[in-house]
Length: 194
Length: 216
Image (cartoon, rainbow over all chains, first blue to last red; front, side, top):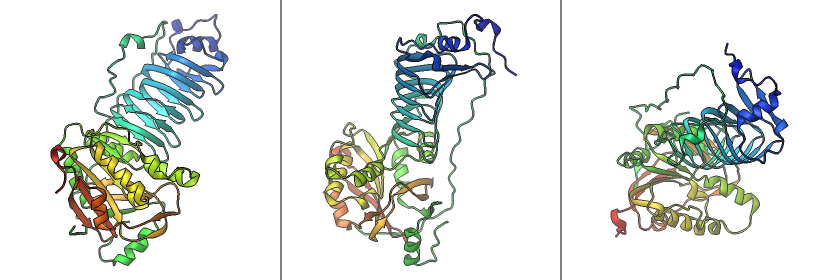
């Protein structure tokens, strides 16, 4: 079972503040830092429903957002989950993005974007794999050819400022599923003279 | 349920009218040719006027390497019919804000069946404008009027088969458009293929002539 590197922890700082630090909410306008909870055993930071962030959010941990964020979110090496209560008006950059709430803005992922049932995205998606569930709402474009590589973003911006280590074992990237055609099916119909 | 060619047209029409939540599978002849027009391009851009369907995104994105633009005009129309306000034709003006000639293929499904003539002409003109030369438009048109039809989602099963599932809203008037009116509506495009299926659906595949040469 994975255990967070003890060196990462700051014993004198309560969990909530440590999580806030690792989440790197660069914006000075984090309205309620006490609403940011760290679930250290899972290595997931959770931004609660009451939190409103305006500005730029960088991180080096998986992050779940249930609150409101406006601006830009970057988790280049990690999974960003927009929870059912999350309302995002921002550009998103992450390894993988899972949407159960609302997103207005473009999403770029290096691995996958997953819009679940009742999730809503209004913006353009760039990712090598995109899954959209029945009941999800989406308006925008999907580009799977650019493999989620943003052209304008510097890699340096994605680096964490603090000595945060994510020691979880990496999952192998699942293979893309391709739809197979069923040969031999001949549709019935007749040509119409027009 | 696969369409049974042994059944008469009326049986099939009755089945279509009672579209279940599980959907209905039916054959298509024009889709294969539409896909052929896309695969002849490198990194084609596809516009889908219908609601997003995950299977279609995978099909076009992963298998054909398309960039997919989902417009969901069905959703717009449903909201408009519930909320009212300005005529839908006016709402469609400038709704497709894409560069002229930037789209390689357009999937209209059966959206035109639900539009009044003014809205249909505005939309057709917008589609013609955003379509690149040699690009293709696939549209389905009913031959049977239905006063209380439901919108459908169309899911591509394979290049010969489409699955139709009920989508949002109901109680929409579905009106058949005459062939000559369809052709007039898409003036500037050539009718590349047209099929009348035993499901009472007419499939039209339009192509834009190269270098903006108007159909003569």
